[in-house]
Amino acid sequence: MGGDAPALGILIDLPLGILMWMAILRFLLSMVLSEDGRTGPMRLLNAVVMPPMRMVALITPTWVIDRAAPLYLAFLLFILRYYMAPLMVGYDIYGVTSLPLEHLLMSATAEFGF
Image 1 (cartoon, one colour):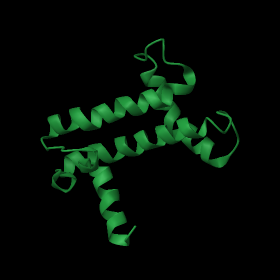
Image 2 (tube, helix red, strand yellow):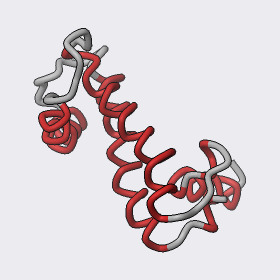
Image 3 (spheres, rainbow, N blue to C red):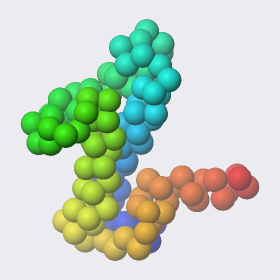
Image 4 (tube, helix red, strand yellow):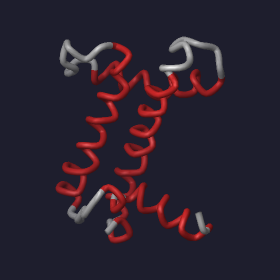
């Protein structure tokens, strides 16, 4: 499970997982806020998510519109975290909640009783 991942797997998964969830959050916030707005959360999300989006823009298909580009980035990061990282590092994934970041979050919420 996620707790059985080696340290290298956790070190690879945590930044990619945080970036994936920030890209999803940026996509969701861009539906209600201006993409280039001056609000603090949107500026923070733009500062973190836009550099990887520019790198992924080289392989993004033309049918992906600009507003959905963060969601496409999140999809690519999920595929990387779910299939490629366990294969390269050598640990097993049995579901989304067994990814190291999600396993950590699920165990923390269970510990606090949520």
